[in-house]
Length: 527
Image (cartoon, rainbow, N blue to C red; front, side, top):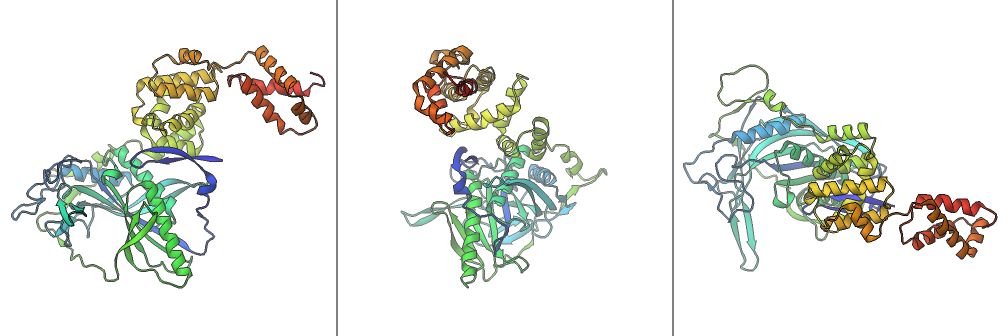
């Protein structure tokens, strides 16, 4: 049996793998050790300028070309809070069911890296923007197990990003690019409510969908606009939590699952052999599929948090009461901006069209795919939702994985042509196998109308009952040995007889009619 796996990393890919391979990863709750996972997600806020300066946040700018005097920590420069970043932070927090703090504070977090010119990062440690939220998300395991999960959100805080160190191995030196210094981030801290990598990957996937719906973060992990750190430990049920390791540099959603599952297994093996787990920071190496040690945490680093003296408390109006404060942000107004979120969309698709949960998940995971589904259905009410969904997922996405075209390149014309092909299938003008060939021609840019292209290629399905009867009679006559075996009770040869009819029809026979006619012929005493 095959299963459709969707990879939403840098190059979106859709591919089939054997379920037996995926089932080798054991997610049973009956194992001796239980994994405990908590995530910290840094999401870059979709704003044109940085959190405390007017410098651009454009990705791909020339090195050190988007750096203000404040970003470079020039003495005498002061931070000016970006209002848009606060509004987007509040919008995100509300969508994640968090409580907004009426008054939040900024702090300095001191540490010394070359890419941090001031020697401290401005963040929110003592009193963050929001707290006490919860994210509910679906989990679909390779074993076909589907369930709902939730993870509590400890807090959401605003903070500035650091710069980027560039290591030149050849010249044996390191350079610093400060374009990223001061870029606005939302740090979303989750409680350790997860048990394994698939749950963590599902949480990140749901968070990505929500942030994209809100348009508060573009979530391009390949550009670093969404970064995930995972805190992982294991323990036996009923005992205190174990020593945790922090995993950094996870560059994709699939990498989140793989890194966490590897780390859980690594810790299990250590503890089972009588060794101990060291409290350390580890790096995920996707190339070798392992976590590697970066630095230990036996002596907790003292960040010397202190109040940021150059930024006043951040006041947010969380009620309908009017206020005389200028430029104050009103939570009630922002709450009205929350769009339909992914879970609501899934519920609508399930209740309206009675689709399977895994089908609904795939549709909602890709905005363009969902648009195609809705538009193709709306343009012809005779099209059935299940057939449209299955065609898009099993046929369109399979061809997209062959790099014929990207999903985002499926324009209005392709949308119309896909609808036409589905109509040809509904009208029994073309078989599913030949519809794949027709779709491939369309995606490669063939402009002929779908029906005309089908007839030109000789892909029109044979549905005339008399023609099919003649084909079946010929196959029965030319294969007396298989017919005799079938009559003797060896019904496995029936598929071979069906294959013979399919072959002599040049793969154009309507196999539903062939099945009916062939069974009727085989039930007769004489042919």
